[in-house]
Image 1: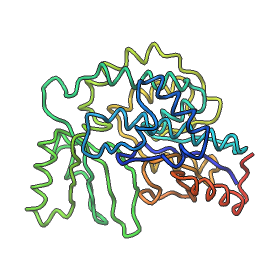
Image 2 (image 1 turned 90 degrees about the vertical axis):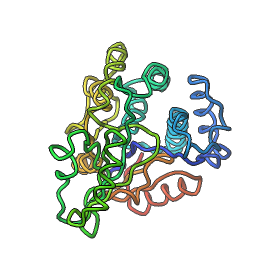
Image 3 (image 1 turned 180 degrees about the vertical axis):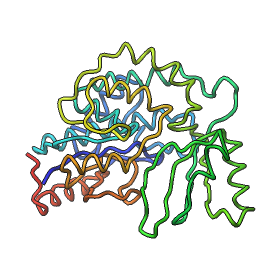
Length: 317
């Protein structure tokens, strides 16, 4: 049985990782390195709550990166050798650093460049946002996006089809348009979908983010992407990605649709039978994985991951 690391695109807004930091020197070392490269303060950052502080999103990302690096290093020290890494969005970026396509410091420098150089809003000054579109079984998303609402886009399919046949899609667009759609649905009983708009975090995987790509693409063209030393899979294109594919995924991440369920199918084709997801990204119960997945957020989770590998007879060395 094959072990893979499965890295989500999410990151925790709530405090995260302090127990891991206190227990493992590898986590403390990773936090120290990320702190040095980014000018952020650990371990204080682990106890910060960013739920209502969107202006500090980059710090939440750096926390996720540091904890992911640290937990991976603990696993490596324990002799755990995943056969592949899969990720979407920030998760694939972390995977690129863990597989040697870029260095860990280069990843931090890319996000620092974005934080310092990308405007808060597009040139038209309108606020962008994202939300969750919840669709009951049999309901097509096309009424909610596209021709009916041309500035609302499906950004990601994070959850697939749930047990009752319903689906949850991540949608992005102008905040006023998403709010209008949510209000419209409350007044339209023959359209059973519902929308929840999230506060203050901008659009994700959306063509309206072209202004971000315009800033980042020239910078990313200067980064020395290398072929991953371990198979790396994304939620955007089939098969394992090479250096050119990693660069393309970084560039296209701002404006292109990604699918977690597509990533899962690619990992399954590769032979994944157990996944470990690092730190406090999207929780496994929020996804429908085709194989068991253990999320490592605490020292107890690490022990559970090791026990699960032995119980399932996973080849991890």
